[in-house]
Image (cartoon, rainbow, N blue to C red):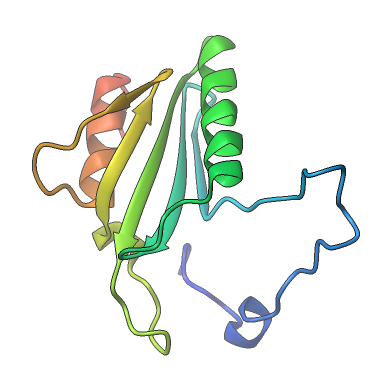
Length: 130
């Protein structure tokens, strides 16, 4: 099924980026990226409850989101959290959204919103159907 992990052992394999250091710049990761027909891009960063997004990673993700927006695309960055035990898979669709960056600005979360619900709203806002 699409979106599921096919090979858990390979998924546990870590990438070592230590050879890719440029001054104080090192690679970061994106936990999820959705491209809705080159019209809407959604970046997703998943964190465990209480773990802050490191400044460098935040800057890279926000700048990527903003650059997509400046190119004429609708772009959002969702920061989501969970408290799933390490031995279980994280159900990202049901993670709580704690922050949304949409088209160059941070949107305040006024009530609990799950990741899937936030993406559904973005799709509707973009005038798309999926």
